[in-house]
Amino acid sequence: MVEINYHEVKEELERKNLYDIQRELTMQRRTRTAMMSLLIFSLLFTIVFGMLEDPFLYTLSNIGNFFSYRFLFIIWSIVSGVTIQLTVIALFRLEDYQSKFAYYSIGLASFFLIATGLIPALREDYPFWHFMHTVTSGLHALFLYLGLVPFSRWISKENPRLRISIYIWQIVIWIGSILLVIFFRKSALFELWFFVTNIVFLLYLSLVLFEEKIIKISVQLLLDEDNLNLAIEKIFVNLDVKTIDKNRPSPDA
Image: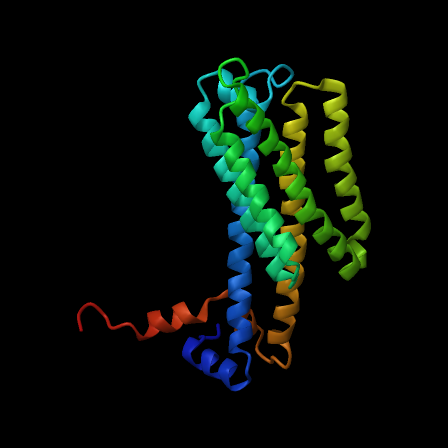
């Protein structure tokens, strides 16, 4: 068994000008884990909340305003809005997507989703606020479309192998939501479809794009490596933490 000296590994990486690359690799792996964890939690939250009452009879807004789930509805809107914004922005930065309009659109989409959760949707008691609730929910979908769809098309051009998959996802999300509105009208089905498919699509993009980036960085670290154990450590271990632990004085000192 080869004993690994993390301090020497760090010095070697710095000497080869690879240390920043290794740190970037660690950051990308952590970001991927964080984003996918948030997305999975948001996905489960959405499905559970949408099933609290009969989804064939009540929309998500109905469930959050007609029953005793008002606070939970607000929490759901915040969790979903923040998760979508953080994930999409992380993907923008990962792919070096520079469209300021897309950044603003995603920010507004999250804002309008949270506003939708905060504004009551009780037509008879608060007709004005019910109208505003409807407006903000529509604006959320609009700005999410304006931010995410152009990015998806840009990705399909940059990664031709993903083109067909991305087009299929776009059809499933948007055409599926519209068809459910037409056939089921006032129900949570189209809303559940819209949010669930968008979250799963972001999970797909996060998995594929982060994995591609991580592989590219890993290849740079593995070039000219004679010792496979050291090479693997450089990819999967945070050398900063190992170095700190190695140099930390013992409690008895």
